Amino acid sequence: MESIGVLMACPMNPYLEQELDKRFTLHRLWKVPEKSTFLTTHSNSIRALVGNASAGADAQMIEALPKMEIVASFSVGLDKIDLAKCKEKGIRVTNTPDVLTEDVADLAIGLMLAVLRKLCECDRYVRSGKWKKGSYMLTTKFTGKRVGIIGLGRIGMAIAKRAEAFSCPISYHSRTEIPETKYKYYPSVVELAANCDILVVACSLTAETRHIVDRKVIDALGVKGVLINIGRGPHVDEPELVSALVERRLGGAGIDVFEHEPEVPEELFGLDNVVLLPHVGSGTEETRKDMADLVLGNLEAHFLNKPLLTPVV
Ligand code: 8YV
Image 1 (tube, rainbow, N blue to C red):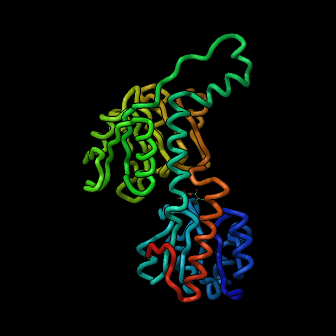
Image 2: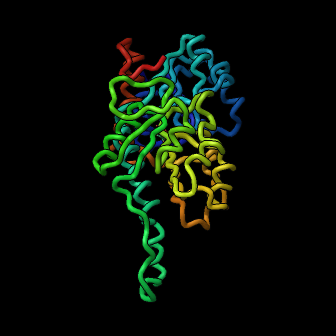
Image 3: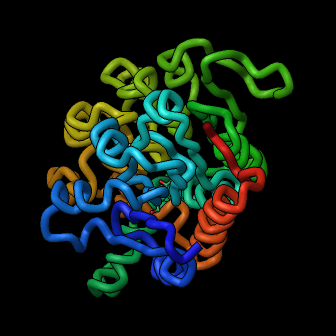
C-alpha cells in the first residue's frame, strides 16, 4: 500500500501520523507552501483523506481530488465533511464512534461538577494564597439536579447513565422520541430548557441543529441554569450565550467547544461562572490511540477490499 497517496488535512495525532507514514505515501496539507498548486500536482495520486473535527473534506476539496476513494475522519463528528458530495461521487466515509463515548461523557460530568462546585475558581483561590485570608464561598450541589440532554445518541446516553448515578432526573430532546428509554421526552428544546437545571448539548452538528441553543433556550434555562456544551461550537448562538453570562441572565456554562475555536470570546475570561476547555472531550492517550487505530483499520480495510470497520457512507 506504500504507493497509495493519503492526504492529512491538519495535524491531529503523532501516532496516527507515524503509522500512516509507515503504510502509505503521506502528504501533510498544513506543511505545503501553496495549497492549490499542491492539490493540482497530486490530484491523480491522492486516494484517501484523513480529516478531523477542525478540517475535513468540503465540496471544493472533493472536486480537487478526483481520485479520492475514502475520507477517514479522526472524529465521530462529520460536520467538516460534505457527505452529500461524497455520496454523489461514490466516496466512502468513516468516523470514530464508540471509542470516544466514555471520555466525552466523563468530561461532560466533569464540567457539571466544575461549574457548580466552582472547581477551577477554588484551585485559583488556593494558588493565589487567598485561602489564608478566609474560607471559600459556598457553591451549588450537583447531586439531584435535573439534567436535560439535547441528543440522546451514544454520547447523550452515556451522559444520562452517569448523571443517573448522581440521582439526577433525566430528560431529553431529539428529533423523535426514543421509545426504549424511560427518560422524559420534550419535543421542543425551549420546553426541555425550562424543565431542567443543567442543559447538555450532545447532538451532532447539522443544518437543523446549528444554533439549537438560541436566546429563547438560554432564557428558558434561566438565571440558575447551567449550559454544558461538549458537541460543537455552532450548536450555540455564541454572542447570545456570552451576553447572557455577562449579564447574569444565565447561571453558568461549561464549554469544551466554541463557534470559532480556537478563538474564544474574551468577555468570558473574567467570569467566575464559566469553565472553558480547549476541545478536549476525546483527548486522552487511550482514546486518541483507539481513534487512530480505527482510522488506520478503515483505510487498510478499504484498500484491501474488506468491509469497513465504521462506515458512514
Ligand atoms: C476531536 C471530536 O476533538 O470526535 C469528534 O467529533 O470533536 C474530537 O474527538 C478531534 O477530531 C480530534 O482531532
